[in-house]
Image (cartoon, rainbow, N blue to C red; front, side):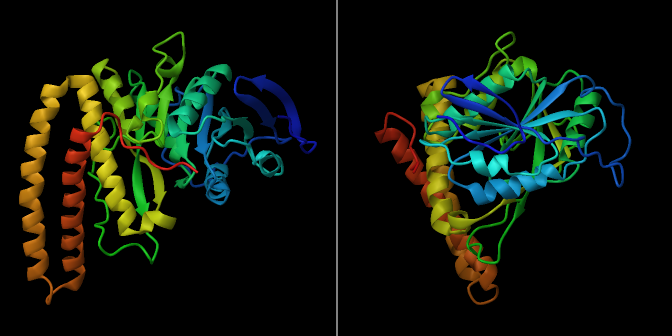
Length: 356
């Protein structure tokens, strides 16, 4: 399918599975030299190309907010930065919207018609290789980044030159209508270079050898295309190959809770399918015997903690209603984890979620 775009198009080229469109703003890239982070040794991005990839599906408003945050990133004069939008839809819709943007970086737009996050992310790896990226940064379309997010990733890559995967720190942004039965996430205070505890593809920077066919050529596992869990499985494979993963505490991403993500029912469903898929991941990598031991351990652990949460919630019913709701909400999520055990035992594939 072809698109009719405004006069700021630089070129158009065919790509497998869709057409790659290039939107380029005439003029210099934005360089913010005021209020920059502390100076550091510049090495990782010198004469290197950085591609920021965002996979999106039916969330144009959130995508525009994410792009707005990307447009405000601090950059050095030598940065070669471009943005890759992978539109994961049956029919593409974003061509005119992206073509009309007044954006400081080159935007590449590619249509991936096969629905599913694995399909979209693997397409972003393919396109990053086609664009000759040295570094690939991955973002989700419903997240926003801090202004010095990219600078902090370069700082980390310059200081820890033998690391090939860098993962930033997430901070939740909770709206007023966020469920009072969900405990806000508490992130561990890790130092630069520590092994990350939250393995989220939506806030990471990956070096060329990871995704390029001349190197490891890693891709996400298609068995998890419509289920979630592909991040965990992907990083587990990297760790088993002795690839170093490094935490970057100052590369901050804001995790926006919106829509159904504000509701307790969503968190219950998500917790259930996350744990179901985790058992499948462990079976793939470590075998069914290991998973059987996990199931027994997790069943006992969650049953005990369910009782603990219910009792503590009841004790706080009169004195602290807010903590009571958190405890009862935690008890409900224990049920979701127990249900995941039964899902795994009676299913032969990861639990899918709806894609519309």
